[in-house]
Amino acid sequence: MKLGREEIEHIARLARLGLSEAETERFQSQLSDIMENFDILQEVDTTDILPTAHVIEMENVIRDDKVAPSLPQDEILANAPRQEGGYFRVRAVLE
Amino acid sequence: MNFEPVMNPYDLTIAEASHLLKSRRISSVELTRAVLDRVSSVEGKLHAFVTVTENLALSQAEKADSRLSSGDATPLTGIPVIIKDNICTRGILTTCSSQMLRNFVPPYDATVMEKLNSHDIVLVGKGNMDEFAMGSSNEYSTFGPTRNPWDTERVPGGSSGGPAAGVAAGEAVYALGSDTGGSVRQPAGFCSVVGLKPTYGRVSRYGLVAFASSLDQIGPLARDVTDAALVMNAIAGHDPRDATSVPHPTPDYTRSLIPEIKGLRLGIPKEYFVEGMEAGVKQVIQTAISRLEEMGATIEEVSLPSMKYALSAYYIIAPSEASANLARYDGVKYGFSVQDAENMWDALEKTRQYGFGIEVKRRIMLGTHALSSGYYDAYYLKAQKVRTLIRQEFNQAFERFDALITPTSPTVPFKIGEKVEDPLQMYLSDVCTLPINIAGIPGISIPAGFVNGLPVGMQILAKPFAEEMILRIAFAYEQATGWHKQRPPI
Figure (spheres, rainbow over the protein chains, first blue to last red):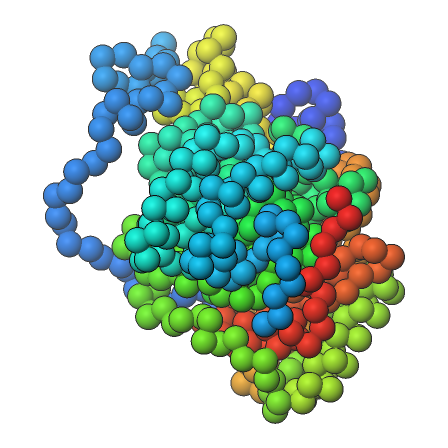
């Protein structure tokens, strides 16, 4: 299936991914080609086949709820682009 | 073992270097200096590192030397290592070869780093890679490509291309890489070193920057099979901080190094000899298979019909998981951040536009599309059902065979620039390695010969947690052939 410009823009918006004009054009043809190759999967009969999300058959892994020290605040904030008063500083969500 | 006189300490294996260190014929500082000198002389041609931690390496070597004198050293004590730059190292840049993390200094160590550090290893530096481990040639590193030490016009493979090239060229004795669809094995094959992807859950992923969480696994790159076993002894095991790591006991992998494969049943899956496979590669692998037969293994062709769907299933599943994992890069908590923006959404989109490179964007787009409303069933869910079929076929094969033998890649190392503009061609480079990530089983690539001076890797696959079987066959083949002793002409 061929992806149109609107679809590329829609996917980019879902991913919150800014794209340049050149990237938008390039992805239109490249993603179309790649997705076309995925069509081969439609020939596989998967009636009654359960999906595998994960290869290890394990139930929920539960640990004891024990109090343990976490990393110091200053180390956690050390990589933050913007911080203030011991918090991550973010942009206004509501304008 | 037949020890040649030590000409270049940087050419030693872990086992050889450890023997010399423990008998005090060489110190860790001397070994580390030899490796750092080697880095100085070849790194300009190879670019295997993002960061070289020279001062740290020398101080760690001094510490290792005092442990060696005290007599409680392990086989890894004082041995120089490269760590792929997506494995968190406390206080040391961990960039994933991305603009997004180019200034990221982790506040904690990955579990594998904690484990290695407990042996007093020597960190030479962080290995160059395809950005966020997405790629098969190291050309998608934001810092520029790594080159193959066997031919510097060619790629080393990827995404653990820096670790593989570095180990092949003597810039460290061994390395840790990560393997999501072949990222340890394919570069190991391209650089003629040993690369092992353990069973999913065998090695903790805590502190490995996530790409595709149901496929990722950390594994060793080494100069021979013995060294791969020694590294596995150090890194394998359950970790409460990785809920997907399994609580099985960890064996001593060196005990599986038996040069004897008489009576083992080896299957040759015909679907792995794909259309487009180079004749030279096929020839090398057929010769290797004949050799295994001469050594007493029984060889039989087997068909795994769903393998032809593995590539498509993989390139839906891995990008889908990646698109979710990489949603965390929002320019708020850490990493690259665009401040000059109109509002929150604009800042977020620009941060991701300028922080991610082309292949990472391509995969985020693919994954987001495959997971999006209206396409989820046709792509993602279908791929997961095909994943079930692939697992079942491997399981059935391992009822009849102790291991499967395949080529690691359909081609020898290709030229830099040859595939970088053609994503589908690049993806095909993983066609022989990615099926086992989908199935979660272990696999190794070992040197199997050369075509016009370019390396060819042979892959050995076995059932879950049968790393010992893989190591045994690999060791027997290695001892019988000696390809691992060849060093690149750099």
